[in-house]
Image 1 (cartoon, rainbow, N blue to C red):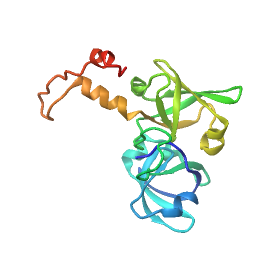
Image 2 (image 1 turned 45 degrees about the horizontal axis):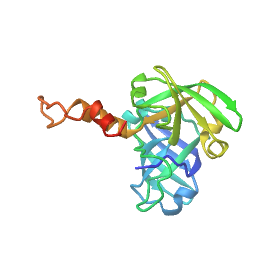
Image 3 (image 1 turned 180 degrees about the vertical axis):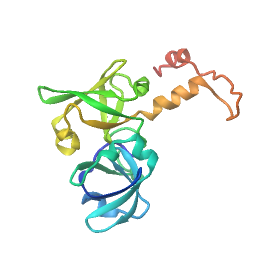
Length: 220
């Protein structure tokens, strides 16, 4: 599990492709302080496993499913990426629950300064992900935990403070660029509970947990 608080920006050093499989080597510093083989590292919001490391870099595998569903397939040597280690037990929870499982990619369609912030407008390539978004709820963009401002049927906006821009790859992103999106996992679980309950067989018992119940008890 991750929190969406980026620890450092890494640089792609080597990319090896074989069909839709990839091996990535990423130059880093801070995340190497306590790295071990098998550790989970979020790379632009994608949970990947460390298969090799040295004093200046980590190497990770990318399987075909991840290749197809994320922007990792478009990386080039020299590109910068957001990096975060899995959350340590007892650590501060500064963002929100992030799994590193990308729901959709999105296209930046707007980047507009607003006093001390920059407002990004993004259109998901799979608009189904918008069903899990609410104004002032959480969204993960390239591994960054952010707060939603507006949500429509086709797009959403987030407002970025200068510190977040400076510490993440969003500083270089412009309209037309593609990003990884992960919706808040809590919304997915609530939807599942509302739709069905019971075993995994073909016949499922309708849940007694309803939208009215959640509203009556202050959950929504």
